Amino acid sequence: MKKVMRSTTRTTRKRYHHGDLRQALLHAAREMLEEQGPSSLGLREIARRLGVSAPSAYHHFKSLGDIAVALVEQGARELSTKLGAVPNGNGLLSRTGEAYVEFASKNPALYRLMFGEGLTEETRRNTAMIDLRNTAFHIIRSRLENHVSPADLNSGALFLWSLVHGASLLLIDRQFDTGNRKLAIRRVLQFAGKGIGLKLTSMQ
Amino acid sequence: MKKVMRSTTRTTRKRYHHGDLRQALLHAAREMLEEQGPSSLGLREIARRLGVSAPSAYHHFKSLGDIAVALVEQGARELSTKLGAVPNGNGLLSRTGEAYVEFASKNPALYRLMFGEGLTEETRRNTAMIDLRNTAFHIIRSRLENHVSPADLNSGALFLWSLVHGASLLLIDRQFDTGNRKLAIRRVLQFAGKGIGLKLTSMQ
DNA sequence: TGTACATCAGTGAACGCGCGTTCACTGATGTAC
DNA sequence: TGTACATCAGTGAACGCGCGTTCACTGATGTAC
Image (cartoon, rainbow over all chains, first blue to last red; front, side, top):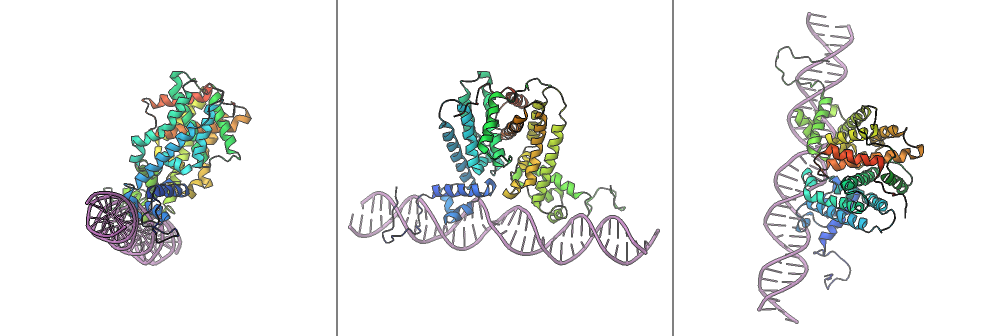
């Protein structure tokens, strides 16, 4: 909008007003997040990265926690978009699962943050946060709608969500040591369709 | 071993030497862990809870990180024991899965700690830590051995592990709002046997 | 049984650090006239 | 086009805090003789 340069200067030099500090803060925060992990997010370092004083952030966010929440929102939006963009066709569900895991493994720290790591206990459990996380669940659920009996819909979606959530985190944590990650994930997801071929239903 | 009381006192009163401070520290740490979450574990407060000075901990642990690692070891041991104790019989795998999720939901913060939350990035990824986590994987894998073709063994175990890991964490995070948790988990696990009844295998 | 002494397991004080946040301020911007 | 002024978005200094850890110490214990 206003990229105004002071008329006396021609080179880019430090301007007193930043222009879009809010965005810049989020960007730096996200960078820091992925470099240091969710629990190391720090307001002072975020500001430092931008060459800006720490208190300046308070003109844009109420607190450090607010910045974290904004990142979570960003993540939820991106994940939804990504899942929504999976093209229709054969194996839609499976490809959706792959997209999910791919998002997590490309944004590992953000993904962990989205599920509450590094946030205080109160923030983690607040309902807005839970709703944000649920975005993914609802997409999965809606994709399952035409394929599964209504009675199975909730459990089925929860099953799939658990699966991709678990696989994402194990992947992020380098918990399995496969050469080809994509292939490994694909094989794991295939089980979601056919099961492991065992009756697990008989109880006690 | 040595519950020696100073002969001049008859009431329990503070003794200069604690007796088994190491164990006491771990116990207090675990208590604190479950109350405040993995990233709030603090050496000073652990000591405070025991009415003991903070530096005393250094006679028993190299650092705060060491305490956390000891807790993770404790958790891994308990989880293995619990999974190992599931009685043989029909639906063994399913009951193992339920036991897994039950462990996680009874020790939510410990479970999160076991998977690296609150530990520094280096600790999280160190191989000893990864091995500890793998304990569960190996039990699952061995239970699957007689039921699945060798080619499917690794993927199958990873599938199941992802599923129970994901379900555990979603449960811990209060991400689903079911009345009967046990039943919900059971229904989710049932899908592991039969799948969702969709061919997900056809790709692209 | 008594004593000297090495060793162990505590202690309080202090160090150094970096954090989130508040405060009173100032420079820059945009607008009304 | 110029000027006064309100508002906005930065600043440096400081506050208060609590943390993990180190240090030189001391009280207690157990053992050799």
